[in-house]
Image 1 (tube, rainbow, N blue to C red):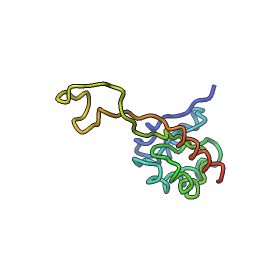
Image 2: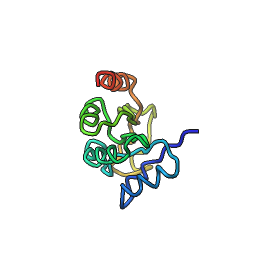
Image 3: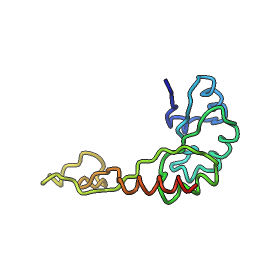
Image 4: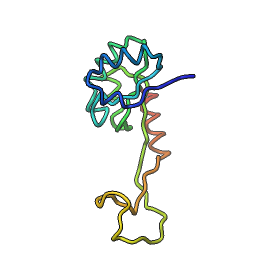
Length: 131
């Protein structure tokens, strides 16, 4: 069985100690954004982690990875595996709803939903193949 460590890694106080601990636990991958909201913002730490990992564990860059930034992340880090959603917002199929009651944040657009776009998946994979 293969085990990947969740992005909880991004909340650790010492990512280099956590890297060693996770390797010792026997995990095969760490899903990380380099301790930033988006992987593109965490490329400096991702590159350092990739170097320290030295092939002992796979770093899986994730959070905000798109067809527009995957090459930049790769070039800055040398990471070869990516987690991405290829999300787009589409109108909800709901016929009507009470605009006064919110199921989440008042700022959230409850008239739309996020789905993975087959075209964005294809575009991102095409960028990966080019690398």
